Amino acid sequence: MTQIIVTVGEAGNLSVTDVDVQMTPMSATSVEEEGEITSVPNEFELSQNYPNPFNPTTTIRYALPKGSHVTLKIYNLRGELVKTLVNGYQSAQHHQVTWNGENQAGQKVAAGIYLYQLQAGNYKQTMRLILMK
Image (tube, rainbow, N blue to C red; front, side, top):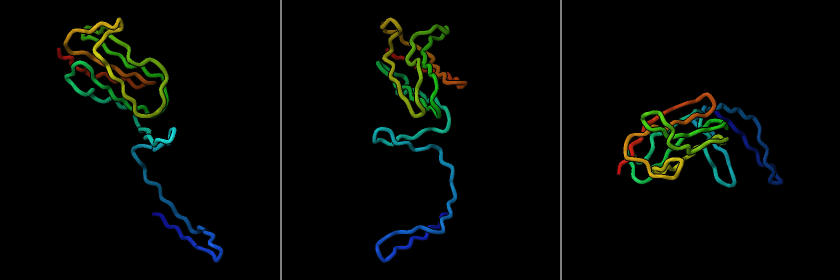
């Protein structure tokens, strides 16, 4: 419950007294960065890529509740590394990366099912995506 009593004095001064505030938990915290307000998520999250199936590009979104070293990698179904999309420190916020269907050498990969894996701190999640030709 929030109760705020505001008194306006003769000179136009405001005084605030008798304040009782009850906090309600939220799913995200708002942070102002360079004039823009962004939300900081409360938990790690890896979202399904969109579009899926895709051709020629797809977007992978993920959320970090705290800054950490992040890797986001694409693997084929044999478990072989196809492409590293992210490898470095990232701040706490929502992120997105676009994959263009190319491997580390810049060559287009074959149509098929691939896995993408996000690792940030102790969090690790793997999901699948489908490249259509």
